[in-house]
Length: 300
Image 1 (tube, rainbow, N blue to C red):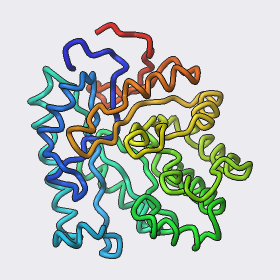
Image 2: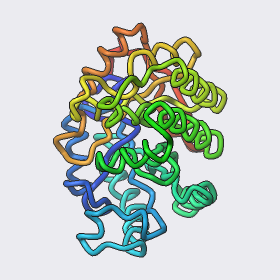
Image 3: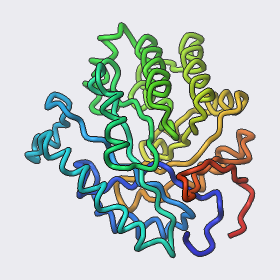
Image 4: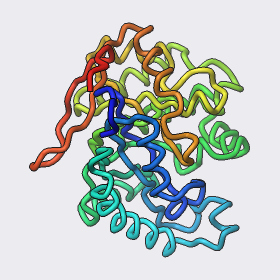
């Protein structure tokens, strides 16, 4: 761990790097160096799982000449590269080896993600929903509008989104559930995202998260994307806390300047909402275990 790092200062989602991800901007080694500078106790590296159909390639990937075999090869190199780097940094930083799931193709992502975890010996996974009925909701605004039209409006899309989160968590049982209200990235432009029906769907997703023992991420990317708050929104944090769901931090970093960004602010955010502790993952010989750490503990 970084010298002087408070025990709560742990990111369980981020470290996306340019060798393996088209929309990341810094090499993995530089990301780990940045994590040391940021004063992290533990840094979970969670590269994106490769998508296996050409129709899900990002426009930037197509422009770069990347294809499905390239994505698969990148992920395999990631799985081979990270363990040695983690060992190299072990005296300065605890580095956890994970990956961020995708929910496409809708009819086959579950066994696909399970196979990635087993084949590449990932220590944990981050459960994310970036697609609703195979349409991206965090890409372009045009794609988000297509998703709204397909669902019949913003409220219907948000409800379907939370249902997709619940389905993913129940099927994959991820250690961490990322950016729970990602639908607000574009959705806030089009109307309220806390209607009674949306709240009901979100609470159903939180019930599944509680039942599986997954940790709910407070994702600081919301700050840098101009939302004025992290994911999830205050009402979701308060609802989750009342239900006994645990929280963790994730900087969702794709560039060295994003490593550690907003973590201190997110700590104050949780404290302001009455949350006094986070749940982290700790490595043991038998694997990872969860541990609750006080946000008020600044001891090293």
